[in-house]
Each structure stands twice: as structure tokens, then as C-alpha cells.
Length: 187
Length: 285
Image (cartoon, rainbow over all chains, first blue to last red; front, top):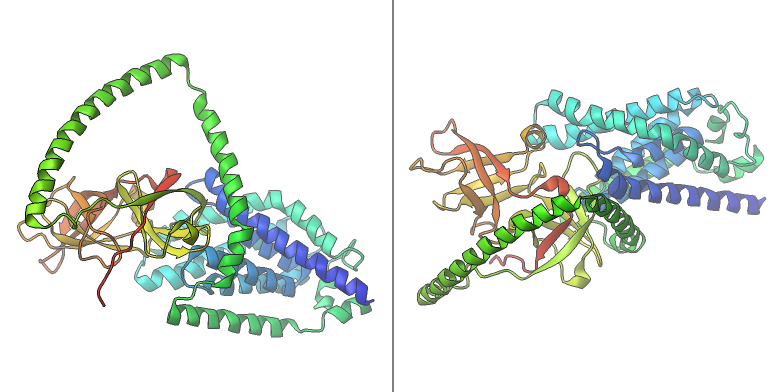
């Protein structure tokens, strides 16, 4: 009994750290080389969002917090800001997990897109509007929406690997072959 | 279900509230003390930087393989053009050296030779880009162990790129002059008129330019194309580094100052190697 719990914890830790590690490298070193319309996709957000609604709110929160912290370390200003934002992205996606059934890819993509838009707006409101950059329309059409579209596009390719990771973490649990309602009962 | 019950004893809301408090405390500490990660920076230095370096190397070699695909005729043509250029530059260099000697003598007479001395630099590769589309920052592969410190200026070619905002052991984060939150105190090279250069995400996206403001040009002589260099009254930027060229200027509503646009000299989209100036501006408190 105790042993299964440890195994589960170790698997979770590997999944969360592994996904963030690869995601972060993709986001900072790989995708900038193939930026479209001057924007790069937000991989950390995809990981946070997917873990949130496939594995539950707690996963979303922890993944989001750690992922955000990572971005904070490397961006070098307002330490803790991204951690806070991504924490709530994870939590929100976890809360929406209860309406997610099985294998449909549309809802996860919709959630990732929605989360990215929300995050973009939050960054705009908290860091740009505060400094009197008032042209919201410009930032939405030139930064927020292109980033959202690109992120969703990349999410289509990352969906299946990440889903596999989630089922690996959860192997033997009720969530293999499930309607994923079980998630709510975990938390 | 029992197995699960035993491992999920901490309620979700508790985690959320705890982590929220941690974030707010971190933000507060950052605001109060300028803390940006401490030991976390050291850890990330060892787990991320080697991989980023690797990816950068692979990406770089793929890019250079593409460049190899030039025809012989193209290369010969380029070679001829370059030879001409070498001749021309050699000539110019000789002239400049003569002038330099003269200048040095004159400067010694005026005791000014320490004002615009040549800066000692170290080269570094850009190994990772910023973490979001909102801010223009990047990571380079040298850090404190190579002598890099916070607030050192970063240049590429002859132009100002930005400033080191954080230095890990083997990596540093650089904020560029085009970053929306960045301000540089600068001056017009010819007239010594002071102004402020601010990065602007909007102008950069629209036209590849950044903002000039508070330019004191009483005699109305600053014109399009004038060089802008870092000012000697700046508290973080060393004096005399080229930032860019004046674009358009308009009078401000106050009638005393001007503001407008300028084009940075550095190509920020294709930045691969930069030079870090190994000295920080000393300011008396």
C-alpha cells in the first residue's frame, strides 16, 4: 500500500519535472528559431493546462507554480509574478476537468486557447496598461491572438504525448478507460 | 478508491492558498530586496544551461549548413567584393590611426583620455530567448565565473544591445534596449543634447523603431539620421555606446522638449553573438 503511494509520487514527480524541463527548452531554445508572425508558442502553459484537466486541479496548481517559477528565474524581473499567474491557470483548468470526457481533443484545445488568451490579457493588464500602454486592441491583435493561435497549433502535436504521460502517471488508477469524472473524486 | 484516498489527504484549496501566499511573499521580497531566485538560479544553471547550449549548437549548425549552399560563382563574386572592401577599410583604418594618435596627444593635453577609453569585452553566445512574447530578454552562455556581473552593458557589433539583469554561474539574463520596460539615458552625438530612449513593444512590432522622449533641442538642429549614443549622465550605461539613429521628431506639448522615434543599430531578431563589457558604471552614492 505504502509502496504504491511512493511509486505514484515518484511517477508524478518525473512527469511534472520532465514535462516542464522539455517544455521550457522547447519554449526558449527551439521555438524562437521558428517564430511565426513574431510570436513563439507558450509551451509551459500547454503543459500546465493539460496536467490540470487530465490529472486534476492539484497537479495543475503544482505544475503551474513550478513552471511559472522557472519562467521567473529566467526572465529576471518581478520574481513570483508568473508563478502566481500559472498557478491560477492550472487551478482553473483543474476545476474544468469535470466536464472533460475521454478522448475528445476539442475541449482541451479550447481550454488551452482560452487559458492563453486569459494569461495574455492578465499580463497586458498588470504589466502594460499599468504603465500607460493603453492601446489594448493593438496588443490583442498583434501579441495575444497570434500567440494563442500558435499555442493551440503546437498543442495539437503535444496533446498525444502529454496524454500518454498523464495515463502513465495514473496507470492502474480508475482513470484508465474512464469517463474522466473520476478525477473529481480524487481531489 | 482507497488507494487514492490515502495519497490525497491535502485539500486542493489549501494548496492553492499556500502557493498563492508563497507567490505574493516572493513578489514582495523581490520588490523589497531585488531577490531573483538565489539558490534556484544556481540549480537551474546546472540543469538547463547545458541543454540550451546543446540545442543552440545543433540549431546553429543546421543554420550554417543552409548557408553553405552557395554556388561557386556567388562565392567568387562575394570574395571580389570583400577584397575591395578590405582595401578600402585598410585605407580608412590607416587614416583613423593617424587621427587617433593626434587625438590621443590632444586628449593627454586636456587630461581627458579616461573618459572614452576602449572597453574590455568578452564574447558570448545567445543560447535562449525570452520567456514570453511581451518582453525582450535573452540568455547568454557566460556568467559570474567568466567575470560577468549584474548591470554590465551588452553590445553587438558597435551598437548597444542591453544590460545584464541577472548573472548565474555560467549564464546571464540580458534585457534589451527594445524591451518595453527599458529606459536608457542617451544623448545626440553631434550636439550632446540629452534624451531618454524607451523600448516599445508596439512601435517595435509596427515599424522596428523605439521611442525617444524628453529631447532638449533648443536650437532645433537635431535631424533625421543623427546618431544617438548612451549619455554620460546615465547611471547604468557606460557613456558613448551607439544606440541608433534618429527617425522622426515632433515638438512636445510643453514646447521645451521633443519626442519621436529612432531606429536601433542592432538587429535584434537575428542576434547570435554578443559582447559583454566587463565593467559597470561606477556611481557615487
